[in-house]
Image (cartoon, rainbow, N blue to C red; front, side):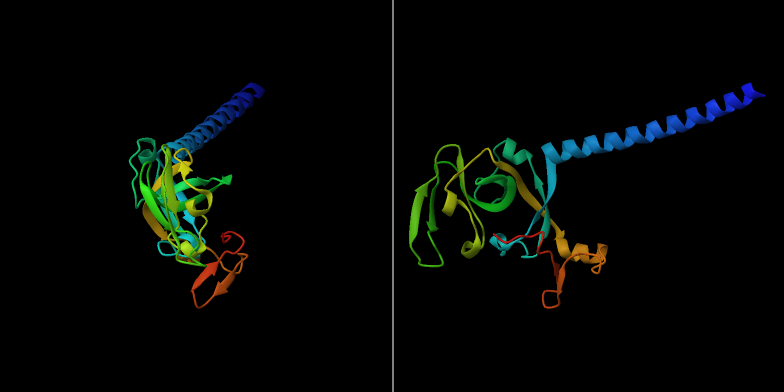
Length: 195
């Protein structure tokens, strides 16, 4: 009798282990595909803050950025790009690409103080990026032309207003945020720091 119980226990244990390992393998495959897609093909990102306020909402918009155009040099003036912040490479920013190498770019030096303009020729291997809201944006006007290397993706699709999506998915009482009835959206001050 002990042998029969032992065999049944062993058989049941093997089926549980087999099922668990199959599910773990499926989860591992999913995360591998997700990692490869996010690293080499396209990624979701969030744009928040005042620097792109004419294109994206101040409180945050989610968008898709594809990475292949950057790898093959298929970006041009007018494209919205995702790039590493030159002064702090751990941060990612969203800007409009205004000039490629050898392009001549004329920009307003300090729009808050004067209308003085300056012209610069973008050096080889660099691009010129600016935020759409020139009154509240840190961009090439402050740190100069950006090397092509920190470019990470080209924005091709605005998914939805992030906070209108959050309004459907989150319970506002459980979220650490303030609700502004005039904007009709949750402002995540702790998440969307203004630059």
